[in-house]
Length: 134
Image (cartoon, rainbow, N blue to C red; front, side, top):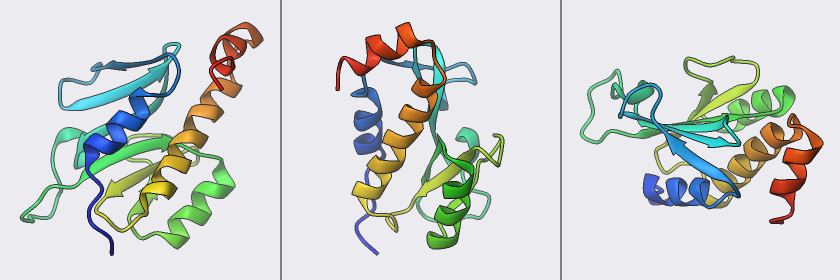
């Protein structure tokens, strides 16, 4: 296991994606990251800001990311801290428990893929206004 990735590092990476906004539609405990009003990530302590179900000394942050269905299953097989999307469509979303077991580069790759998946469903005009930043 590596040192626990700080949730602020993930949040900083999320906010640096082009045209990303941070909103709180589910309450101040759940950070929702959107590109052009389309959600591509959530970040909260434990289950949707309610903490972890088991009592532990430290609370892990949970991040929901959109994912290709086949890749979603593969990632769950590889990493025990990736589970089907909590409170999300479990075929299209994964929950990443930021407990330090996943390398930061892999977390950033999953964030990039979530962002790209959401952008790919937008109109060509909206896609172009975002892709110009790459």
